[in-house]
Image 1 (cartoon, one colour):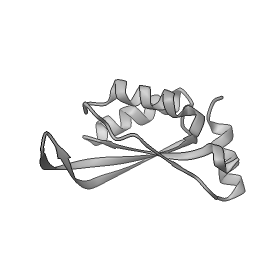
Image 2 (cartoon, rainbow, N blue to C red; image 1 turned 180 degrees about the vertical axis):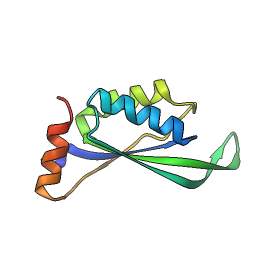
Image 3 (cartoon, rainbow, N blue to C red; image 1 turned 90 degrees about the horizontal axis):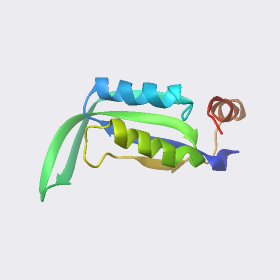
Image 4 (cartoon, helix red, strand yellow; image 1 turned 90 degrees about the vertical axis):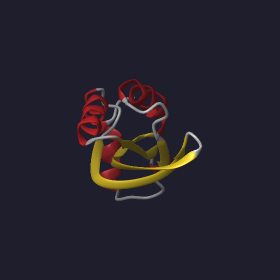
Length: 107
């Protein structure tokens, strides 16, 4: 089961934006859980120069097979032209928690 589960990382411009995206994904049962971590300081290349921004990191727990639908919804709701949407596999976890993720997400 763990090899079908993943964590998806998304950075957002604000807590409000992070909450809006998390709520939409939860309502569609595309994710089991969304953790918002405010206070993130990001430095990155954009438009040929190094930029800095205060962001909110959202950590989603879900099934890998939901990635395309999640990415589409994040892009629809996100204010960035190129939002961060990265999936990381869950290679191990408590059996009960992994079953909860599986049962809490659709498909």
